[in-house]
Image 1 (cartoon, one colour):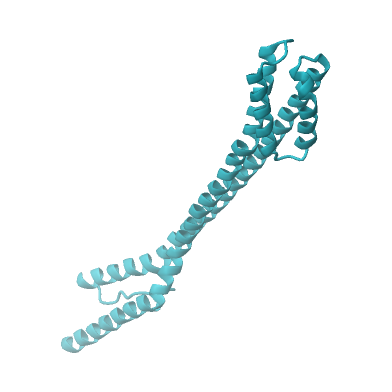
Image 2 (tube, rainbow, N blue to C red):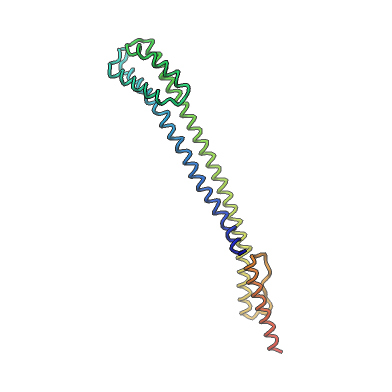
Length: 224
């Protein structure tokens, strides 16, 4: 039982740490995925709507917007309103909505106000994207350093496990083999040393020592 427990503890700790590292990496990517998806769902759609509005005004030049262009601008404004993700967007969109009727007719000041509002909308969403990008980078860096730490700890545990196995299992078994081999070649006095080994291994070495002692006693009796 002691041998089984020690083997489980010696080999199980690095395995457990590697499992923690693997599942930690999965958890990190699972958290970064929604952050990237949030950029697409919350900010890119508003930027696309703003670009559509600017495009329609650019195509019209100083002339009033045609009816179909006005419909597209209004649709883009509605899409941006349904996709409000930052508090700063609300007053900007309200100012844009107030400027649009006169801007549709070609009013220069109204168009300037509308373009300024669209630019503010673009700037707000770009800053929000940068903030999400920084958060994703922070999580990635933290996850990378955590993985390095856990990997280094797993390496140390693996080295410790190898050293422990060498001391507690390999050396006693190698010595046991050497004792038996030398006894076969005629060395009657060589014995296994009592080492810091699991009880099962110690019992085997002690049993071999007793057998060799009994063999030596029997040989001495026959010689006398």
